[in-house]
Length: 193
Image (tube, rainbow, N blue to C red; front, side):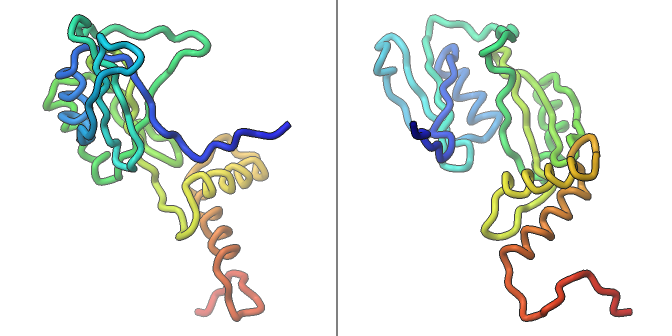
């Protein structure tokens, strides 16, 4: 038996209301360019609109002009989506409260997650959206996941409750030492003063 090896999220498809509500939210609020539009090939009564969330992957929405944008909380049982998290920069994150407030969008306010900052709000149909900003940049040639797995290992070894800045900094240092060669025979921390 062999795995079917995933290499990333190809796209996420959401059941939306009318076409304009989808465009106004995904592009008009979240800044995702509207890049593709066609009928839903499995249901010709629906449209299928595509947005680029900033990394070249896709968020797609099935639209239907007979569905109204009623803001209601979706089911929260096992197997249902809890929330959709979207990456933003720290600079953008610093502006989220002001930009949500100027539209009258109710939100959670900033949340400290140790390794990232988050804010939550609901889309026009009631789906929970999280805007998340990492507090670190991974070393060249590594990913956020590489840093997080090393930070997790450090956190567990130290008996700490959750990943925080110290774990990130130490994980980044370790990853850099693993990836970058040096002519020094001793790469331990020094105190040259």
